[in-house]
Structures are given as structure tokens and as C-alpha cells.
Length: 537
Image 1 (cartoon, rainbow, N blue to C red):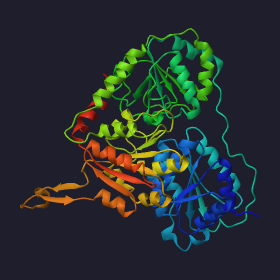
Image 2 (spheres, rainbow, N blue to C red):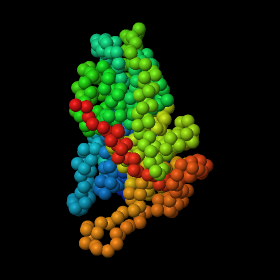
Image 3 (cartoon, rainbow, N blue to C red):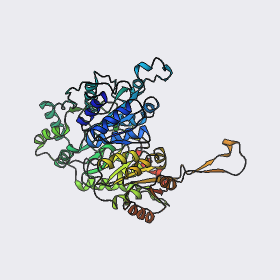
């Protein structure tokens, strides 16, 4: 008879999980690892629990099936919170399996009793304790809940004395129910709104999946209307497309287009994607979503809930003979103006030039992962993604330390594609131990560090120390030497020719490579002012 661990692993496999990430210890972890080995489900050993959760979240985002994480009890759970919060806010399906003290032992070690469910409650969709008679039910429930809109992480707590017990497998369905179809009268009302608009703008968000991309393209071309994508939806309409206007920042950068719109068609927009600032546009919003919007920014004039591809397919015959007033030449002018605005000249190596050169010297289909920080704005603007999943970033201003574990997950899923990780020096240092994971797995990832010297040279003010002598300076980490200590090829560059040569050399490596790019950050303040601007009155 199968064990509880066997039943849980079988449920993961039936859900389509391709590998488990984690930082295991003893207890139930060992039973789950053995069950995974027997079932042929690979395990990726990581160094940090939060990084493992990010890898699982990215796997879920790219495949549409839950990513899986294995963690120890207590400190391992608390160390996972940042990664689980990322998955929760990015709407990424994840099954998080934690070890737990045996119930029989808690009476002897009450000082070690750590309430996992209470700790994780704000960052997971649900948390349950698995027993021998409930394993089949709870793994099916966890997968369904993780995939139900809005998607997110689900926690299963597995006591050490339960994992090896015999369990009765049940034929439980692990997939959620299909999304409802909008009512015909609502589709008619949406069509009336669209046909009455002369300058509609499409705002596409994270609920727009890969299968929806063809419908989005047909819809925007038929109107026609310019398309702005949130950071998470970049690539849903190919960036080189004449109607692709760029990334929606909820700031001043897209004001020339959205400020003139008489209808905003929000396609798959989750308000969790929006930067916390007032919604200042007066045009009515037609919201087409997989799950109702939680509100907080705008109140849609009309909201249709259902499968996005089906909604657009149903709208198509209702919009025949309609033509908006947008001119493709005008859209192209607006796009060029916003790109030129971010090309801020600086004396040294400009951040936006790293992205432009990287895109030019990498093949089509290359995947870029982007960390939080000021460099995310030029990365989002100048990285040309032609398909969903070619630009991976954490929501909003987001999770530092995202780019490196995200790159690992993407490379494991798509070994035939190139993967670049764009990160700041701070985010890089937060997850530097995962360079060993890259090197051990021989993943040909190129990590590009936007090194603005914020960590490498810190002046200690005399008045802070009561020191009256010469200014004290602290030399920080040598990122190139750090990468090489993990067996990773690394180069330091200070100009465009040096960066180009390092990028070409990195693509010839059989394993990972790090490029420490000493950028000039003097243009960051001006760039942020351009992006954010002032909200409309």
C-alpha cells in the first residue's frame, strides 16, 4: 500500500508538476524525497527557502501548473515567507510542503511548537495539516485551490510521523472547474461600449495567458487600438508590433496615450499589478477578467468574468465594421517619444545601453529575468519580448533577489533557450549562494549585474562615529571574485565595448557566467521622475 508521501507525490505528478525545489532536512522531507525519487520526479536542491519558492512560482507562471516546494519546519518555514509572498502577489500557483514535528512530540517540546499556518496565513491561499486518511483529498484540494483564480500558493503541513504511514489513494480530480461564460447581454453591452469609443486603449494584465495572446492580437488589430502591458503581461502582444505602446507604469510615461483615451479596455488586469497611487484617468473602464477585480483603484463601468480567449472570440462578431480613430503612425510616434525620454545620457556606462546591447546580441526567444530596482525601468522598456514568458519580473517594485532564482527555473524548463538575469548588486548579493546551484546544474545562464557601487564603496561620516580624522571608506565585495569562488565564469566591464565582448564570451560558456557591469547611476533620478511624473489632477 502506498504511503502518505507516495500519495502526495502522485498528486503532484497528476497535476503536471515537473520538479520539486527545496531545502530539505529530516523528518517528513526524507519520505517525500524518496517518494519523488521512486516516481521519477526530479528534486532541485537550493540554498535558500525563499529562492526555492521563487523558482517554484516562476515554474507555475510559465507552465500553468503548480510549482512545488519542499521545506523544513520552523526556521525553514519563516525563511520561506518572502518567496511565498512573491508567489501570492504575482498570482503564481505553488504547492508548499513543510515538515512538522510529530504530534506526539509536541507535548515534550512545547518550546519548539511553531504555528506554521498562523505564520503563513497572510501569504498563502490556504493551509492544512495532512493526515493518513486525508492525503488524497488534501493534495487534490491544494492543486485546485492553487489554480483557482486568482492563482497563488497553498500550504500543506506534513507531520514527520505521518509521511510514512499507509494511505488509501483516491481518484480525486486535481484540476479546477472551467471559468464561467459571460452572459450574452453582458457581451452585447461590452460591444456597445467598444463601438461607441473613438480612441480606446487596451491595458493587458497578468491574467492574459499564452493561449490568449492570439486573441489579443486579433482584437487590437481589428479595433485598432494601442496596447499597454503591465510588467507581468509584457510579450502578450509582441513588443515590435506597431500597436504595442510599451509598459503601463500607472505614472506619467503613458499619459500622452491613456490621457486621451475615451475607453480603457482592461484585459486580464489584476489590480495587484498597479503601483500604489491614485487612479487618475477619467475614461470609463471595461474590465474583461478571469476573476473579479478586488477594487481599490477604479470601479469598472462594466466587468465581464470568464475565459479571456472565449470572451474575445464572442466579442469578435459583435464588432464587425467598427473602426477606431487611432493612426498606427501616431502610435509609433508615441512609442518612440517614450523610449527617447528614457535614453538619458550619462558620462559612464548607461543602464539602458546594457539592455539594448543584450537584446541585440542574443537570439530570438531569449528569456530575460529582471530584479527589483531602478534598472527594471530600462529593462522593461528596451527588452523586446515577442512571446509571453520572455520577460519575467516580480510585481510592481517587487521582490529583491528575484532575477537569479527566476533564471534558474526558466532555464530548467527551457534548456534550449538562452536565459539572461538582469539584477542590481543588492539583489545579486541576496541570493549569491544560488550561483552554486547554477554551477552544479551547469545551467548556461548569463547574470548581468547593474553595479552602481552602492555596496562596493561606503563612506562613513565622521559625525556618525565621533571621528575627526580623514574620511573612512569601506571596500565592499568584489562581485567577480565572488562569482568565481562558486566556479562561475565572471568578468568586470566599465564600457560598451567591454560589455559587448563579455556578453559574447558568456554565450560561449558551457555553464553560467556573471558580468559585473560598473554602470553610471547618475541618470536614475531623472529617469524615475520621467516614469512616475505627477498624477493627473
